Amino acid sequence: MPLTDPRVDAYIEKSQPFARPILRHLRQLVHKASPDITETIKWGFPNFEYKGLLCSMAAFKAHCAFGFWKAALMQDAGKFLEPMGKTAMGHFNRLTSVDDLPSDKIMISYIKEAVGLNELKVAVPKKKPASKESVPVHEAFTTTLKKNTKASANFEKMSASFQKDYHLWINEAKTEAMRTRRIETAIEWILERKGRNWKYERP
Image 1 (spheres, helix red, strand yellow):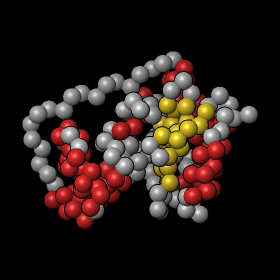
Image 2: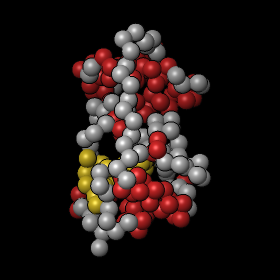
Image 3: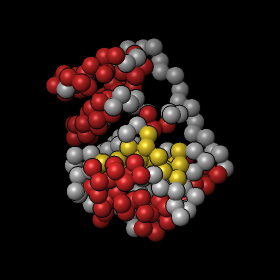
């Protein structure tokens, strides 16, 4: 029997109607890939563990997200993994239905690969320290932050390196559309006091 957590059941039931079948399907795939994977709630959303953090899923107002903690180390043979934060919190873009996911066979192969990385205790390379040079502040980002009182307050309370990571990420967007998506994602994370690279930080 898969080691499930009743808090995950509660999370799914409280999610938007469109999100529930997506979350249930993802949960089913995770446990199908390995009966040794356990569930927990961290940072307010479901996480799956096997000898450490493995993957996570989350539901928002209009989309869901699913991602791997060691995606940067995965081979991604099918080229399905999006860079985290490029279009959403996870690695499979903004999920609005089960049809947005790759096939079950592909998803299970990815989950098994993630299990293998944890089995081998492969570590994600440590992030390089942020340089001390100043970073330009993008007007669109600051304007959006000011419109959200809670996000703005959270951002101001955070360290200079925390703020710099977000400014760099926004500035590096190659198009206005990409910048807009990154700003939306940044606000979601800042509301939860998450750093730009929170997925690779140890809980």
